[in-house]
Every structure is written in structure tokens, then in C-alpha cells.
Image (tube, rainbow, N blue to C red; front, side, top):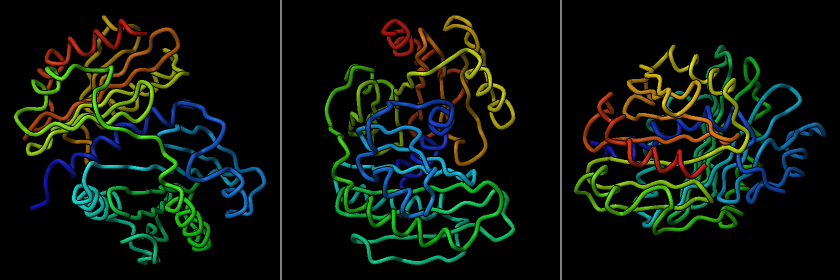
Length: 303
């Protein structure tokens, strides 16, 4: 059976997506793995633009045909953990991407695939593994996906895989939570705290599959938060958190792959704050809102 620690990363990534999609998080001058010029060239699209770029290795692009692309780097303390996440991605996030499936000669292992021809919107994905690091591209079409996208994404997959070490990621303590809180919330497993950038950290523990994430976007509004809340009610259980401001809420018991984690979202002084929690050996429940109160209040007070 696959270790729950790594299957839960798919849940975490799925819950992160609304925050990335809603605003330009951590706007940087350039994506550390894929410069905008390479995206323009690969898609032959002069109007392709970078929406945001995080120095830690999370970037998003929009194409003139309405398609969108995200590129991320994930580093782990051990190569064995990176390999387990790679296997988890193929078994979950990429499970439906079978069309044009290939294993490009990139890094130690790599995979590329696209959704079925009749899928609307169509999707495609690329992932490569090299030592303790993974590079992932996710593409979403504005409608059905064309076969000719494959060459563009494979080109960018090779470029990004070669520059993945430009992503700034480190391990140690984080301003979001204390070591004691990590131990209390994540259980008896061995904890790992990964700092991805200012105001963006992931703590995880193994065994148990638990995780705690803190992250922000600099362009939050109560309106955009309200839109996220409305969307979440369609696939999750949502509990309003008025003590954290207008439209603040917790979401949990969502549809797979976000079915094990809880996300807490609020906006303060123009900053959208998201916390994501996966408890050890179980799915998140409403009682976890109270368990996260101290960590959530510290985050609220910081902004």
C-alpha cells in the first residue's frame, strides 16, 4: 500500500490551487525554472504571459488561446521521499492522463500524458524525478486539448527539469508554527519543516501522513475570498469563520483528491492567508478548526 504521507500531498496541492488561481502570488521578475521567453518560444505565442513566479519554484502562465500552465519544483530531504511522491503523482494526479503517454529521457524518470480527446477542458501533465527533487508541469486547455500541445510541454519540461535547482527551498524552522505545535498537530512521526519562501512553509511527518501548510497571496480581497468560498461549497463542507473577517472559512471533506485535508482561508490587509492541515492517519474533521486556533490566530495577528 502506498504511504499516506505522499498520497496526502495530492490533497494539499489540490487545495493550494484556488489561492494560486485567484491572484498573482509572490510576483517575481522571472520564473526561476522557465523564463517567459521560453514559454513564448515553445508555444509560438508572443502573447503568452507569466501570471506569477515564486522564487521557491512555483510559477503560472497564461496563453492567448485561453490555456493555462503551472510549473512547480518539489524538493524533499531524501531521494527516497521524492521517488515516493513521483509514484503518488502518477497514481493520482496523473492517473487520467493516458493519451500520448510517454517516458521522456529526462532525469532519472519522467512521465508525460494528456487527457482523453473528448475531455473538456482538456489537461496535460509532465513530471520528472532527479535525486531529491521533482519538476512538475500542469496544463489546462480552454476546451478540448490538441495533440500539438505535447511538443511544447515536453520542451518546457526538459528546460524546467534542467533549471529546477534555481528554486530556493530550505529545511528547518518556520515563522508559521513552533516546533511544539508541529509535534502536537502532526503526531508522533518524524517531522520535516520545509520553508519554500517568505510566508510559505510545509511541515510534514512520517509515519502518519500528516501535514501542515501556511501560505499567502499578496492580492486578496473579500470578494475573491467569497468566490473561493462559493466554489468550495460545491465540493466540500464549509464552515464560516467570521472571527477572521468577511468570507473567512474552513473547508474539509472535499471530493478527491482533496478529501483528507482541511483548508482555512481569510483575508487581512490585502493579504490572502491559507492554512492547510492533514491530521495523522485520518481525514480532517470540523473539530480540527479548534485544534488549529493558536496557529491560525498567530497567522491572523502577523498580517
